[in-house]
Length: 126
Image (cartoon, rainbow, N blue to C red; front, side, top):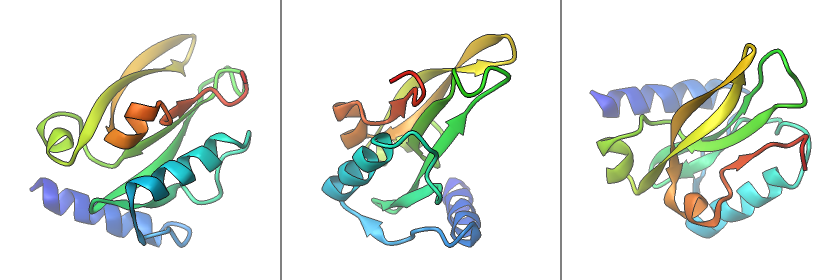
């Protein structure tokens, strides 16, 4: 069932603004994530590529305190838990603004990005 969901998510993302669907290696993913983290603007294309068969996207999270509390998160498009672990991902709980407060949300992060701490950036606070 989750494989069907992942395939549907991939198909939806591929149709979204000409998403990059080429397979990417660990080093490709680090290079692309580093490039994304080097700019203040959101990337034009949300999808960085397909890593180990799973789409990797860039999410921009912001609430009513934009852009000061904007958070950019790079993650797999799968749920945290056993599926994430099986794919070689790590779970990270990331705080993002929500209304007048901040909430933590968990994401499945590609291990290579989690290890190098290249998965989250508060882009307007650097």
